[in-house]
Length: 365
Image 1 (tube, one colour):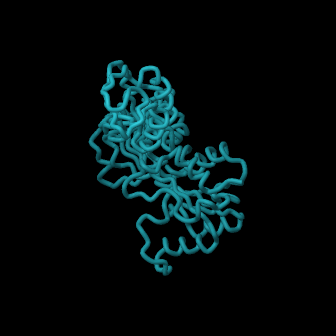
Image 2 (cartoon, helix red, strand yellow):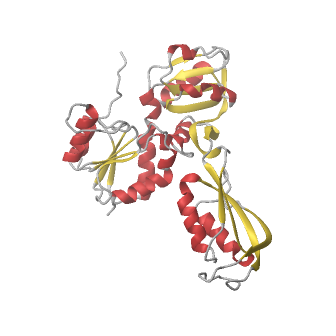
Image 3 (tube, helix red, strand yellow):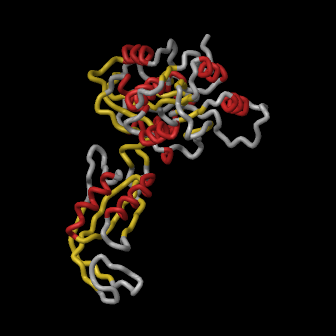
């Protein structure tokens, strides 16, 4: 038996809700956390066809990429599509869970998965997230420092890029005096005490703050734990939109465009760039990523694949830089495969299906 709560905890360990964009609405939109999952359908967009498909397949959960509710609903009168879909899900006891920009911004995540489909090597985040890291500084008796460090590491602190268990320590002396109301671990209350201590510094993403502080207090021997938290401006290499990497060998533009069409299963591409261009480094951002074109160019990309590019945005001014609009639906379609792979690895107690009825929201003629 798997409850919705268990699945949401797993998905949010992969894609923390705290990193989603301000405008987004990821997370559990309908349903209760104590519902038992019978089966699940994975889609990009929640539509009436997808909900009916879930009903017919005896699935009481839909995992979607795009929220069916972006803004708060003030009423449920059936006067808008979000209201109708919400009513339909509630009436049929179907939970809807969304992983949108939090899945886009996690690395490894959806964009690195797309980069893998393009067979890119040495993949990195295109737009690393700033102001997401915090530094923790604490002080503890020297003989307890290893235990405190390990507790912090187990809570998720100390990760820098591909390295974990990162910290800095320096030994010194701390002083304190407890009142008559205290029960000090060392020293005598009412008297100043000097203790040989280690200053421990480590970093953590801000959304783990409660977990990290709980681990600190739970592992620290002192009755009152002294610590400082600083917000850092460093960019986090594990979160951010887009990805970029290199092809195994350079490709001429026509050869590369053919590869892109095959990868994203589309018959139509819009692009700009010189026919003499040679493609080696490629950047990609699923969905609407036209605003990151300059960052892709500065990252050394020869080509940038995204969607929803406006006409004048193709006039980017970089002669040998290829700008490709492969379609919103097409660049995000791998969400379904990515989610099914992850969920199937973790849970085997319920059936999970690709949506077979989902269609692109627009058609090509």
